[in-house]
Structures are given as C-alpha cells and as structure tokens.
Image 1: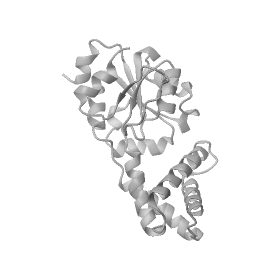
Image 2: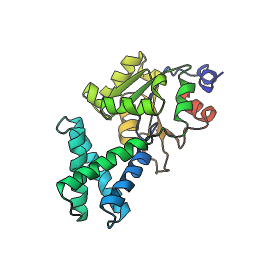
Image 3: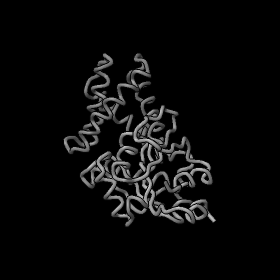
Image 4: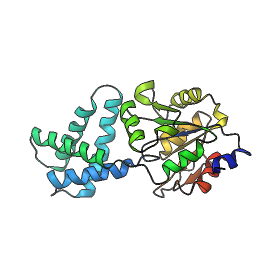
Length: 246
C-alpha cells in the first residue's frame, strides 16, 4: 500500500495541486547551469552573483511580457540578456547578444531535471488522488518539462496561465484546476514554493496550502497556519503532511 493510500483513510483530500518550477521541476538548477555557460563565454569580467541577480530581475520582467503576448519567448530571451549586459556595462553587438541567448537556451534545456523525489511523490499520490499542475508559464514549455522529467503520466491536468488567461495568485486559476479535477476547494491542497503566488493565491481560493520551502526562507506570518516542507522525500513523511486535513 502506498503512503497516499494509507493516509487517505483519514483524509478528505481528493485532489492535489502543484506548482511546477522550483517545486517539481528544478528551474534554479537549469538556470544556473545555463547562466554559468553564458557568463563564461560573454561576461567573465562581471561578478557572477551580480550577473545572476540582474538576470533574475530581467527574467521576471520579460516573462510578464511573454505571458501578456507582447513578446515571443525568443525575443524576450534576447531582450533580457541585452538588458543584463547593458546594466553590467558589458558591451556586446547584437550578434553576440543573440549567441548569448542561444547559449542560455541550450544550457537550460540540457540541464533540465526534476527535483529529487518529485517522481516518487507524484507516483505515490496518484494512487489515491487526482493531480493538477498550476503554473504561470507557457503551456508548451511546461508540457515539455513534465515530459523530460518523467512526470506526465502522473498529472491529470496542466493549468498554464498562457492557456487559461489568468495567473497565480488570482484565485480563478485555482478554480479552473479544481473544476478540471472535479473536486471542491475544501477537498484540495496546493503545494508550491512561492508564498505570494502559491500559498496566498491558494488560500484566497479556499484551498489549504503546503509551502515547499526548499531554501529555508523565513515564513511570513500571513496567512497563518501554513505547514512547510523543505524536501519532497521520503514520501512516507511528505505524503501525510500533504494529505492531512485541516
């Protein structure tokens, strides 16, 4: 008997919603590997920590442009690196900016991995509950990550902001996931790493939330009563936390 089957006897949870990036998929690992390649080839004179910080800022900035349909993924990638280099005083011609963006794309793709324990966790949960992915990203990109990480077979529905026209923390995207799974808010739990998007968003939709606090950040005081986990393994420990009723 799986940990989920054992726990379900005393649990009302029928559906589990997961964030994808940095909850099941190791986005930070992929981004750092790709950035290291770009830094080495095009900006080795710049401090890497500052390079990474600037990139994170412009990644978020341009990601919003992509989700709004104002930029393609490729154009946004080139533009964010143009901004990163300009902010650091690194002079590159447009051809080198293009090559830097391609270096990042290839490096990110080759480094894609699931977070340790993600496959086993979803496999165990899927024996007794329905599973949804709720993500602020492009549908095709997230489908590809699930495939590469071996997670597709355990996911009942993928709710991507690009596809449904609303983003976390808007409660509507969580309601769409619930409707697709055929479960009520009080029968679901959301697991994610972003306090603002995943935890506050889920709670606003009436869904219990579990914070995946992988890096030991200080827990905000609101909303209160949120349980945190810092790893996905072992499943016999994490599953009862996820499936525990309020």
